[in-house]
Image (cartoon, rainbow, N blue to C red):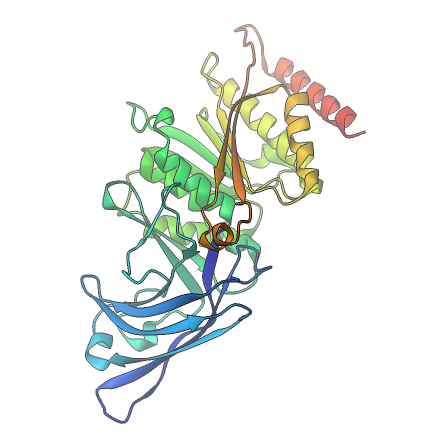
Length: 375
């Protein structure tokens, strides 16, 4: 499984050393899973560094041992480096390379960066920055909250789906007209923004959590120099999908780690059906949107999603299983965790004589099918 370096106490320069040419950086961090429900069980070394945009200066290192929950790091920082625009890095990669967003090269432990600052007063202590090397040497930066809200963290399924999108040539990288891509449950925006880097798109990032959308907007704004895609963020409650404005046909609907809660699965499937039908109304005869779903199975109840997708007339066109590289599990002979990626498409015969009333009847019929499937 992937583990993440997380700040329990954000990086701070707490006091000047007596020599007058150094400051003292201190932080408390942990190495945990995406949900924070388990700590890294192996041995590793956490390296700290300061990066000023062109130069990486190693600061110090600390050893993480099995059974640990917290690691304290203190490091001397030359004052002259703090006068430049810089950021701190905490990583288990002794070469200090930026984490690669590739399915075959995902790191065991994802590094943590501070926000960039030019004066110590500018050091933002509320966020952790994840930096991923993507196509063409570009860097995707995703900020997530330091707190406990899972809606404002990145999840394994999102990281793996983003990497798969980067690697998947089948979807095509360019065409004359930009793709229109809608993401459900965007959270911090990791998957949608990765799609926006691999292909020119019109991105619509949606979530029902307003705080998550704040992070998605922040991450989209900071990606403006990384891609040519245009984006917008919008609230979407899956129980009221009609409230979302849709003004052009969709090419892709993506959803990562959205089926772990069985109570929300019926509304999610209804929303997908609703979006496909509304997309089809906007341009009759256009290809049906492809729906790309990723999940790292956490509960057996997730199977209900696939039953309801079948009941709603979706065909599963592709299923890819991607093992998550885990050096510790491999060393003790444990099975690797797997992220599953599914591609669905709804085949709807569209006749030019159909009007909106006909589509409304289709909506009601699909709702009845879902209700029967849930009984």
